[in-house]
Image (cartoon, rainbow, N blue to C red; front, side, top):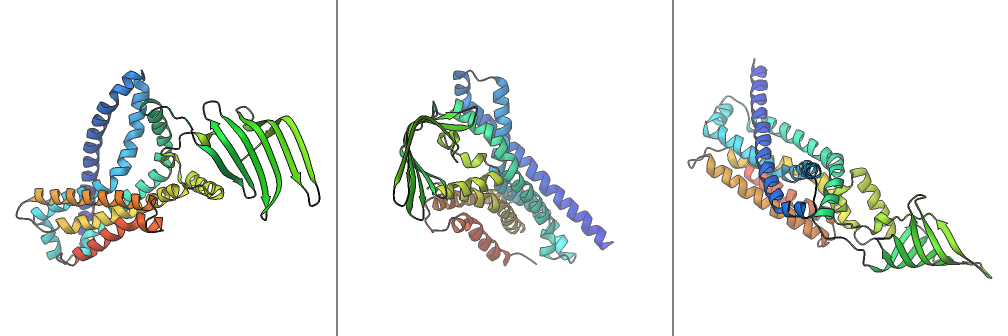
Length: 363
């Protein structure tokens, strides 16, 4: 009988918690979509964007915003539901019946684990796929046209192969003044120079024009030349496209592959992709930690009513957002020489706050 009562109570708390989460999420997403549409409507009209494309854009925009808001909304939902229980003295009755405070928190944690797991899977696989269209749409209709303007480009395309490009035109996918060098154990083995290289869209390879190749032997040097040469490199026009928020469009497996590829090339921006990976792993734990704090700050009955507790919940959620944005900025600036530590800093700080606050609750 006691077990049956606990199951009923757990189910009741879990339904209230998940129901509040879905309700608050729906309201905030609706408001954000309306505001975003109002801000971008001029761009839609200017670029004559069809209603089907606009609808598809917002259908991909919603998961993105839902993912960003999940930890905050979980916290607000926790505070709202728990403060309601406290106002009706339901928590006191539950504890008086012999249920420990730890046991009382169990359905909340089950809900937080469920939300965190769904959030992680969505961030790892679903949302990056929808972001491919969303970000491409924004770059085409909201942002200015992108032109690749870097000069003197050096890229490591294989363990012992390096390419130098004087300049690159991303409109025609043409590179100018190309040098390919094969270096083994610090010794230059081959060097190939070409006036231009152009991407072959059908063959998915580069066509080198007016090339000259030098092969260095121990005692002599071989020289070859020609007007056209096809070659396959670990390089494509995608590498010269707009990389803005590219990390948001990569699934977890694509993200890992991209990190390996950029590490091989010695790219300076590889840390940005590592930070994105760490954040995706960290976010589900944020949900659990914020749920824990939310239960504690709202479990006591307040004389000022639930409104004060909900306002406090919004304040703490705001502080978490500030801490999260600051930690990401510190990670990108490599302030602590450890992106993982920087990314996890909000969880560490708020986790310690939760442990300290836990000592104040009735048990």
